[in-house]
Every structure is written in structure tokens, then in C-alpha cells.
Length: 219
Image (cartoon, rainbow, N blue to C red):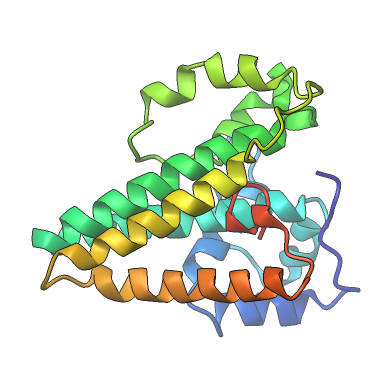
């Protein structure tokens, strides 16, 4: 978790790219506000361009990525729920499952890092989405942590990694979205299946693909 954000002082460009030129601008601005405040203070009302460099140089790049992803996922879920009908049913289920997978992967990837210490649990838990089938009870269950802290144990022969299991479940979930009609979840599922197709092609050609690209503390 030691990777830090460094763009050789080009923070004005970063600020413009994220806050002006892309749809993640609102999430990025909220992240900067949270990162700029003290633990006991309220987030500032706004961020000046001149402050961006000082804030970003102190941030862990992976934590920033996951904070933005979490904010986007929560916003997307709220939008989906507002649609109602079959779209809310199908897409709501997909996003809840993705939120749960994110909780598992963030927890797993945080093991044996500073985020797994008692002092940093609040920072780790802040990366968990505020919805899903595991929320909120799942964030309090320690069975997963206790089972994984002995990570030095050799995996049984032929055992699949948690990333591969999540990958397979995602494919099944996206395919099931086509079992119902007249909802927008089909478009989301189609795009996701195409992404999985590209991933499979790259792996079959020997490309270096990190399976944790599915989520967790990875892009």
C-alpha cells in the first residue's frame, strides 16, 4: 500500500482532468474534501486548485482509487433503485453482489498491511460500500479475517483463488441478467461480459493480467 500519487507537479492538469473533463468529478471533489479535513473536523466546503498538490502528495494511490470506486458504486446503486421495476431488481442484485465482492477483496488485500492494524481499521472500513447483502452485519464478522490471517498455509492442489471464484460468479450473474426482459441491466451485463471476453483473450495469449483487476485494492 505504499504507492503514492506523483505527477511531477502537474496537479493543475490532474485537477482539470478529474473535476472538469470526466464524470467522476463530483466523487473526486468529495474525496479531496475528506482527505483535507482533520479527523474531528467537518469537510471543507470547497477545494482551491492550489491545494490539490499538497493533498494528493499525502495520499495512497490505491486507497484513492478504491474511494472513488466506492463513491461511484454507491451513487450508481441509488440511481438504479430510483428506476424501480425490473431494472431495480436485476441491477440492484448485481450491484449488491459487486459490493460484497469488493468488501471481501478489500479485506483480503488489506491483510498484512497497515490497513489491517487496529489503528487503521476505520480507514479500511471506509472503503466498504454502504449497501450489499453483507452490509452492515458482514463488516462485523471476523470469520473471514481469522480464516485468512494464516495466509502462509499452502492452498490445496487445484484450489481456485478468491479472485477466480468471483470472476466465475460475475460471469454467471451477468448471464442471468438476460433471463428477464424490459430492463436496462441487460446493457450493463453485456458490457461486463465483453470485458470478461477481452480478459480471457489476453490471458490465452499469455498477457500479464492481474486477476485482482476484477476489484479489491487494484484498478
